[in-house]
Length: 360
Image (cartoon, rainbow, N blue to C red; front, side, top):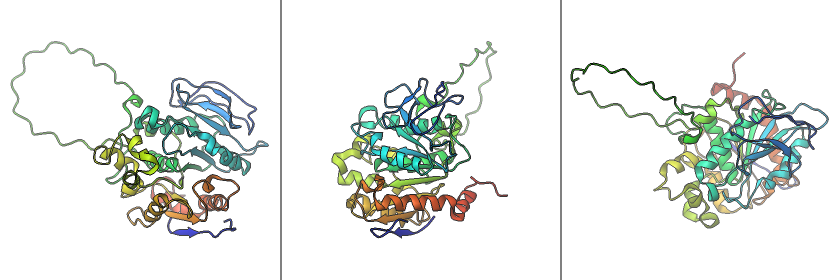
């Protein structure tokens, strides 16, 4: 997926339970581990079915299906922005979620614990847990294309989630962040060994080779989480080092990652797409040209990155929130391009190259 698309103004281009009768369609959940020990299903305040994937009040998503019993054309997992701060919620994405459902999509609009209150590890764990929970929804159609769409800070999370979920054994230069310890299954205690005779002293052994870096998203890779076909970043925060230097949104990135790039180098390397040297999944970057330079310039630079095979950038008139406004030209252009990519041989060739699609 390559190139820059410019659009002119005016042009479009495991929680137990069983629930049905949601505002946007029917849904039920059960069977598969949804990433949290608690959970449940209820009517969501944004018009979808509220599905919990953990015990914390912020660990839930709102699920919508197309009306009239239609099979979904695709599924979208939405990650809202707000520069990683708790006052901003999934309500930012509710109009977009409703619009996608009206277009025939299934939609999981995700809330997650923000790092200002819970720390970066909790945010990272939650987006993976939400993806795993999506696979446990009975009305989820695994054969339909799955697109993760994030706005602003959620755009960064969307790209990281897609890349971490693509492989449990990343090559050098891919985002690397160890899965939170809380998500790893506890090891069984070892049985006591019988007393043995004293062993003869053994010669000194050669020093052990260093272990490879921990695989990112290992929890998602082992939980049967659905595979992401396309990652879409809407006005995404794609250069966290630059955002740190600019003190964007009163130092939001420093707050979220727990320090400076020097002190938290591993977290920045894992989370900032601008620092990656390869990608495994197709991306679409969508950017309003009337947005701030702290977002416009890094997205243009990312699209020009040859190591990442020049991710496609769709740039059009619009401010920071036009990209999530169903009435805005840039949103219509983005949906049109997403639809084209899901149907195109270009996306199929990228999936084939990554081993995601079996050749016939």
